[in-house]
Amino acid sequence: MGLFSTKSIDEQNYFIAYSNGLFFERLKLVSFMLIFTYPGFLYANLFLLNKVTVQAYRWVLASIHLTGFLLSIIFLLLYYFYKRAPKGFIIHTYTVLFLFIGATASINSQLLNGNIYAYIIILLGVSIIFPIQPGKLLIYFCSNHIYFLIGLFFMDLDQFALITKMINSTGAAVISYLIAFMFYNLRKRDFINKSKLSKNAESFRRLFHMNPYPLILTNLQNDEILLINHQAMDYYQLHDQEMTKIDGKFLFANPFEKQNILNMLEEHQSIKNYEMEYKVGSDFKKWAMLSLELVEYLDQTCILIGVTDITSLKKKEEELFKHATFDTLTGVMNRRSGMVLLEEKIRGPYSQEFTVCYIDINGLKTVNDNFGHSVGDDLINTSCDIIKRNIDSKDVLFRLGGDEFIIVFFGKNKEEVEEIWEKIKRDFHSFNLTGQKPFDLSASHGLSYYKPGILTTVDEILEAADQTMYEEKIVGRGND
Image (cartoon, rainbow, N blue to C red; front, top):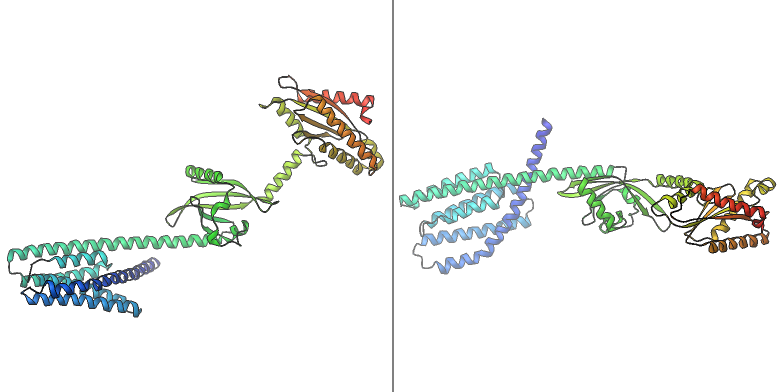
């Protein structure tokens, strides 16, 4: 209970200090206005009202104008040259004096024109312009209004006019006080809400920077970065840049991806596990998993982005994919991937014509027996490298197993395929002439063809190519 009371007292004190500062700033403007308009009042007193026969009216009016001018001068001197002046005392003194001047001006008007405009204007001005505690303001209004009513009683001899003015002035005083009361409470409520918002924002910032993971708070509509912690600065390598020059454009690869993110957030309010790839330099990549959520921060809708570095996980995925897709010895596609590719070309929606070349590398068993399996692996790798050099990028080479390879040619007829095979054989022969390895390269090949619409299977296509390869091996053409 004591804690809450202390917090309430602190908020009240902060608001009073805020109101006093606001009062001083507004009183400064009023003071300048009175100083600048005083020459006009002086001219009116000396020349425009010089024919007024009631001299007491003129002197009292001139004294009121001069008093307002001097009070303004005194306040401005205090404002600019005496910073430690007691604000509370000055505020309440000036409020009482302004009310007194307004009441006196209207009482003085009874000598000439009988209006009470000055008093009503001052009442409304004080209630609207100056933020004063309602309790104290009520005392000032009541005391001043009693003085005003007494002054009217002695100055206005017309009973009906007196009653009318008393009723109107009292109504104006009540309305003015209600206006001041409402404005003060609205101002206080707004101050407390802003104070709470500021405290919440400070707590949010503290927790934000304490978070061990990269965090970014941004307004993606204008790419403004509102908050970014050190972990995010490290992850995105932003330490060399000035904070004022950092915007949210680095978060997404292109504006279309950013717009897609905004559309998803508008629909779902949050996005979990959104994967992003970032290029760091020319040959290095990072992967991040983003969690995005719409949050309110300092009266604006922002996007809180949590970043998780998944680079190591992605690298492991790539390695697993590579092992699952490519042959570890030669680096070309493995049997499973090659068979899937052929199945797609036969059964898939984009079926197309192709030629299969079945290749059997000769002499692998002999090399393994005479020189060991490492030299046998070198035989396979060397043969594979020469084959790869002679096929197009759109053609596919995969290892069927052991010393057997498959080339899938797209968009080539039989003569073109045979011409490529002859180039491979010539490269084998050229390599053998160098004598740089303890083995010679040679291979047998067989072809089979597929056209869309033919009812067949991958196994049947490979079997047909294998059969022609076997026939070539028998007649000895693969040893040329």
